[in-house]
Structure formats: C-alpha cells, structure tokens
Image 1: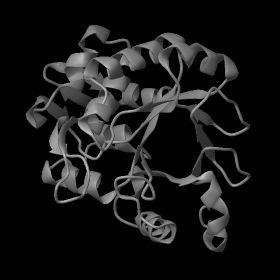
Image 2: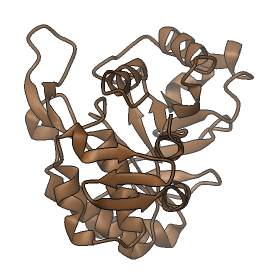
Image 3: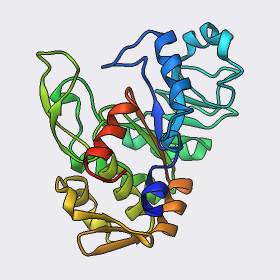
Length: 254
C-alpha cells in the first residue's frame, strides 16, 4: 500500500452503524466497532458515532471506547467530539451542520463545519457544485470540516441508496473524490477544478504513489495530503466500515 493512500485515509472513517441506512441496534454497532479496532484495516477507522441519548447505554464498554466517541445532538462527558445542527462550541471539537451563511459564525465560535453529502433519496444528495461551494467557503474561512452520509464508495457513481431490495438509485459522491478534492483545495492547487474532481468516475484517473496521488496529470504530494487531513478535512461518517474497505480492495487500491 502506498504512503499517499494511507495519508489520505488514515483515521478517516467515523463509523456510524446506528444511523440510516444501516440502522443497526446500538449493541451490534458497538460490537462491530470493537471488531474493526483490531482488524487489518483499523488504521482507517476514526470515531464511533452515537446519539447523545445512547451514550449511557454503552457503560459496559465505555472504558474501551474512551476518546473514541463522536456524540450527536449534545455534549457528553464521554465525548471525544460533538456533532450538532446549530452554531455551538463545547470544550471538545464541535462539528456544526449549518447553512453556508452560518459558517463564519462557526469559525468565530472556534468550532468546525459539517456537510451532509447523501441521504436515502436522490433529492437528499447535494450536487457536486454545492459540495464544491461548501468546501471553498470553508477553505476561505480556514475552517476545518467533516462530511457525513452517502460516502460508502470510493468514487462517484450510480448506486443503491439503501440496503432494501427495492432501494432507489442515485448518483452518490465518492469518499476518495471528496477527500482528495479537499486536500487539493487546501493546498491551493487549481481550485477551479474542484467540482470536476468531485465528478470523476474513472478509477484509472487516480494513481497512488509514494510521492503523492496523481489525478490525471496533476500530482498532490503526500506531505500536502497529511497537512490537509490534519488542518482541513478531518473525517467522514459512514454507516458501514466494511463496504468502503471492500470497495477499495475491488479497485486494487488496498
């Protein structure tokens, strides 16, 4: 595995198995997370995303999850980070899912931004242009962010939006597209191409090398990726960890 891929994906996947479309029972999702912590690809695993009202139900394993909980809806003493749908600031890193015109208030509060990149219907998926605009505004404000929802696949494409047999199909964003585009933007390289990069569907357009990642003829260095992951694009939430891993393996990138 190339260092550039590890830099791009290290700690990137916040596991949100309790949330749609997986909607697993809390105990099952917690068991999965503990299993993923000890698997071959644990280096990609970030935090365990839980609702604030469910944290108390984790008492039996809370010591194991110490420092690993992303709590949604409210602060909690066990939270490593908080995710909330308003402008707010807590002692822990706080990710605020708000409108574009509220991002400056998020920055002034000392918190971070959050963008929803998918949903269970096609209409819930924002356009590549909307995602690009969000990221460019965050970059302008020097505001770190995370993404959530719909990022199960490395590359943009048409996929089923839930696990139901009659699930609708929609054009979903790819987590490689999003992470790489954000790293690209943070490094100041041709921001006008961000939307085009978010729309890339051809896996052969990407090449992971020791020195960095190529997208077509454009190279972003591994050092720039490390810096952007630390300073700008922190992670993305996914209700599946195994699905992203398996998709990367199918592409031959893992």
